[in-house]
Length: 573
Image (cartoon, rainbow, N blue to C red; front, side):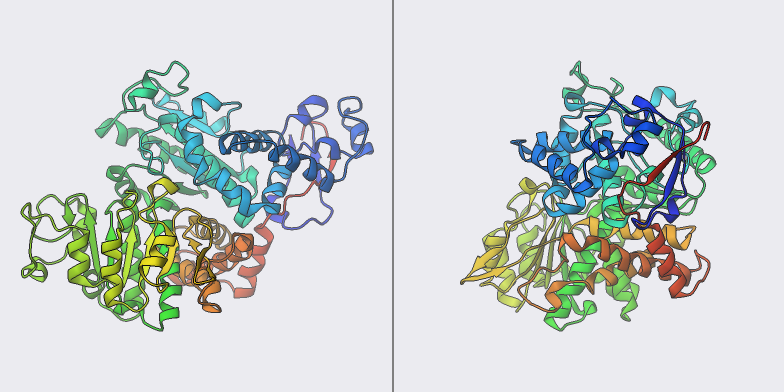
């Protein structure tokens, strides 16, 4: 169909694609379609005369027309549908529009609106995108992978739809997550869209509403679990290793019972990572590092309380511990600085109900011997804050408003600049509202949130609220992996990504500014992250050494800029 070296498409310089498609088939290919921008000579060469309005438009005019249509949509779900449809018919225009309106549109194509889209997936479905690996076809996964339309797959994002954001089991509707994540890989880091593959592992769903919905597009069956589930996932992984041995595989939105377990099982078998665990950990660490620089303290001196002890929380804890060790703390010292609180209270060694991933962060029982215990022996957030006097409070529990005024004021009584990150999303799940946190701390809090919030006006001054958004980390990590040809992804690569992102914090120059960069700068941020990740991969021995200059050249060469190349007809390409 086409012949293109994606690694060379890093600029808008004149480049030529050899294409065998003509007529309507060409117009229906989203990677090749130019719509009204097709020039006169290409319209003749590819038999498009009469299939398009006669006026040849400039790309800027095409963008303007498309944006006007976007603005006519009166709710976020309709905006999501519009952008998804645009992506399905013209990917260059889709990414050009996103780059022009990244702040406005990134929350539409991903969090928080993608959650709503996943909930309604079977009702708003237009066209297929990605690969649906359904359990009934478990013996034919190699065949399914052979059916992928683009053969040079370099980045795969896969989910089983069981834990979509804070919304639970959405079955095949979870496909919206890999699609959205890979759109961000392209938008933020320039990974060519033809080299990406979204995948949903459809193992059924335990969502009764979906099973009862005649419009539900997934396998109408209760979710497969246990050994059958593990065998199915393993068949998928082994098929990926055979078909795309050099691809980076990102695990996304698996339930806590599977997320860490699958990561541990496969991270040494192929180049893979879990963004919910490692990406969230790194982007949170980056904000924390920036905040600590503002307070002129050190990471190893922090007392960190994390509400919620799922995959995101343990991933954050893991990254903080690794960074503390790099500052000279022992492993035990670093872990003892982390206070995890799950649905049963403080995670400590006296409990016999702890999942494996929580055990390393269980506080020794002797540290809490003199604490006044509640009648049920459950040590909650209020008591932990009163006893620990945390310098850092992080929320990943998806419990709206759980960071109460009483808790925040108690924290602020003992800390000059409390660092507070209510990270749960969508917005309705946020542990606190930034305006309240600013008020309850007399403007002293350093805040980052999981969902976007407007600036807070306090005593006549605007305080910017940074979004702790994984889009600042995982696209750059992927770009760094591809540029360095890394064979594996290590924790040191994520710590390097966090340090690189922290150096981009506007708050380092203005204490009222955001802890995170403006989303408009995400491409340059991703480039910095990618270089740091590539160097860390070389240092860790999972990538061949090169000069920094060579690594930077590779990173730049991989960053595709959406533009229309010159098309040249060639039969049977």
